[in-house]
Length: 108
Image (cartoon, rainbow, N blue to C red; front, top):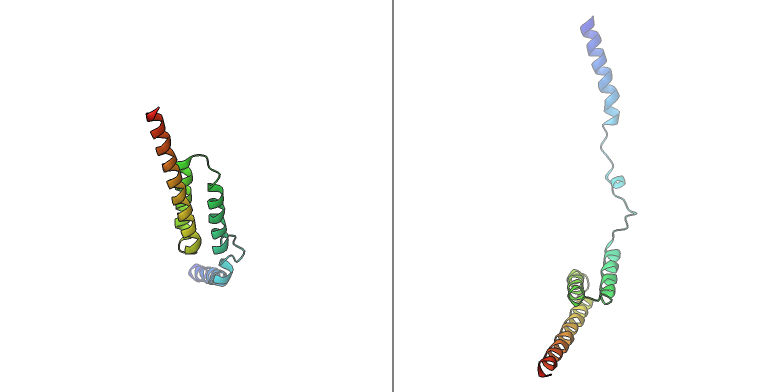
């Protein structure tokens, strides 16, 4: 009698758990309202490039601009190339200006 009662309880417990063991719907697991998209990521990179122009430290400005251009390269090579060119011209201008300043200080 006790054995049949145990089997009955086990059987009822299994029946109670089976409806809850459904597979999850994968469509509800994906959040379509995510703010992380390709366009928003490219917008953030472009803002970093624009804000990099306001950094006072030349080394930090160059580092930030080069990293942002590198991130931009797979998505938009034209914009990335333009950013690399502007960074290179900035480096050349600052290098030429520092050479002139160091040359004039040695002459004086």
